[in-house]
Length: 387
Image (cartoon, rainbow, N blue to C red; front, side):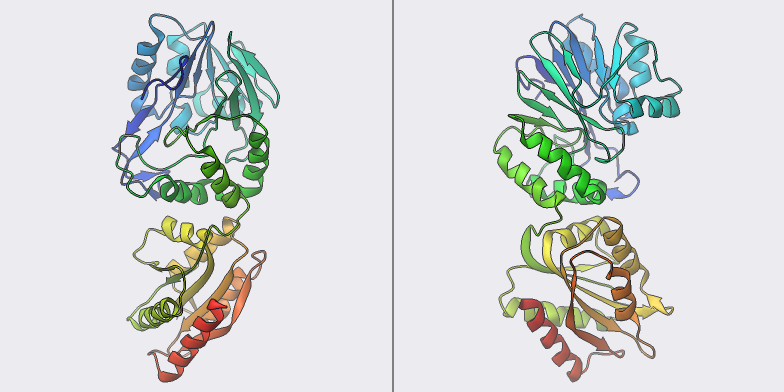
């Protein structure tokens, strides 16, 4: 695992202690904090790791240094899971120089009390750092997904050090039965997805480079079939449809709304829908529900009127979609209310400013329990969503 190329080594760590990444994303397979070292006439270390693994990281680095000393610490991203050991590194290697963006040095002082004015190189778009046979080219990547981010291209080995882009949930020594895309998609839309335009701009820069390897700060090193990963990122960063299908997201208090949802799902499958994904927002991982909403071409939202509003899980879900720039989908609505149903109106109001969205004309209106009339409405909605 350590050797990436003749001169570049992996020195990151796996975290199996973490339950929630960034305090909200479930990570049952743990998390990887990636760091790399480039061994040339000059030695550059690419990023740090989470504070809890600082000693292990420094030990990994020492093993690769073979009694040499690093010349540079390149800080591409200032989130603490990548920058927490800057102080320890700079104390251990007092001759080393930090290479990072101007905004990163401001954040460095905010986080760690030091912006290293006497031991730094400010890396802007187009800045180069010659290590010997390796020349590093720095690419400004603002708001992917913090304002200070830079990426780094190694001209010799044609490696893109991509910061948080192309990242993925899961430790590198964990099982990955569903393949890269599942947890990479959940990671992207949860963490980076709001900044699709900025990510697309950086992707266009990257596509002009001859890239043979992508080294992200989370997840596996990508070395084969790079077109697959780049194509997926192009789809994600443009908010395009990845898979044809319909996702149904619902909440249900006494089971009646859930009954309507199951009827709709069965009808859609019978009519030949290529994929029907059903998510109970009260029980499903919210990040996975958001992932499905971005992945599939159409969505149906079903919920109850609750305290003259909509059920809290549904409001949170819709607000998350809006916040993350969700767009370009067809939307069907199912509402339930015993005396004053307003859920469909509220849901539509929350979503009406999403770009390029279209609402189905058929809306299912349940008054407590599902009736024969409701079954006809569900059939009509299924027909319309299949068009």
